[in-house]
Image: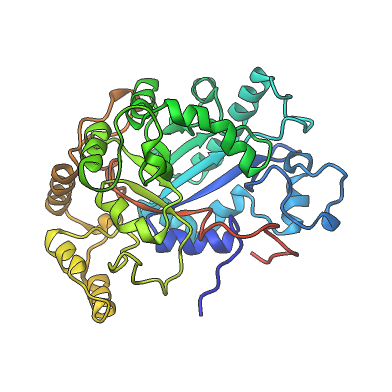
Length: 390
């Protein structure tokens, strides 16, 4: 029986990158200038395990954090399974860059914009050096952050990799509820169309978007045209999106099928191989980009019933050709099908990615994907109850 590993651990990330089209995870700088995979501002272990009165991740060295069981970015890239999937199999790495808590020694205070920008720039350069060392293709990676100066940090860094902003902006402090309340005014005044235009004109390569933009009743709150996953609102979504990649979090099983059918990439917390039948009444396909279905195969999957879906999934998994093994004709056919279905438009030249085709083993940038959120999914706090073997 499959058991979910703690979020952002090597075990969790290794499983998810094989099971999905890619992984999403969080990076922070350590006290000695290294890079650790960790979401929260505070070290997510029982307080009794901490060796300092200050709880923030950036106050601990890499060795100290690894001794708790957290995974370094280097360790992730050194893992043969992860490296092969990410580098050679066209899997996507969504890298969220985390700012430290403003009260930490390197946090820069609540209004230290220049310090915040410098910190994220340093994190980008340090992460980029590791990605380059392990030959991870640019088109298999995207950086993003809740950071108002993201474009400035990218321009100050030496990276050529895709990037985006996380909006509405959520500051790196406060409770989950207080963060959501502070983000509410921005959400209410920024329609999805405005969000798309902001990212397109800023030079961003994709749009990370909260699920609230697409499902009722909250999707009716922002000003402007309403977008959604069905009916007129789905047509509004397609017109506003224009095929520009949109990555949506969190994507729960009950909306996963509708979200992918609408041309959106989902970030999911569900990596259980035993989840083969979705609550929506559809067989689950967890690698729509890297194990792509042609029209006939897609119809077969859509027509699956709860009674026969395991046989159909077994047959498809045995016969579907991975993207990396598809010949030029098959790739062209798949891209024509996707482009027609989701009304792809030309990518802005400013993002520096190939338009209308894919490089090497990587599916096209616009392809609809399913991404493992924090690896195999978010887990309870503290993330590590005791030392976790990776």
